[in-house]
Length: 157
Image (cartoon, rainbow, N blue to C red):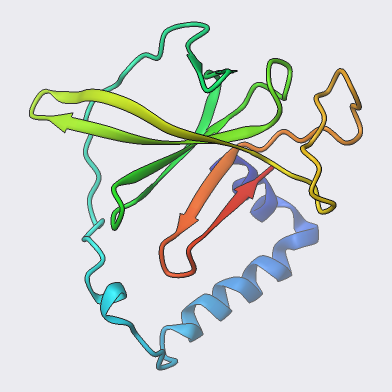
């Protein structure tokens, strides 16, 4: 996603829009917002550290889907749930994301337990077709974000 954002910023066509959003972001810091108790308890994420890696076996199946090609991951600290986006262009199963619990240990990632699979749907409620079925209506999301404040998920394509 950062490469797409940098290309967006480097485009002369969108330079004014990017400056506008930077101004909007900076000016919004001065605006007083209603803050909930839940927001005040958000964890400090001012520093990142490498925890480790975990390899999901090739052709690993969960709920009659093949897990693989995970291109995005986000975390809800309040429920301790991870959201993971599958990026196989719907060539194996329809476009989807998974929820999982990831158990950490002092040595890194100890265990990953998948909880559920959710298929991405079009505005009319139907699941997106695969590229083989309809190349023009297939979706290929690359990033997933969970908002604990709004309790929703957003995808970047």
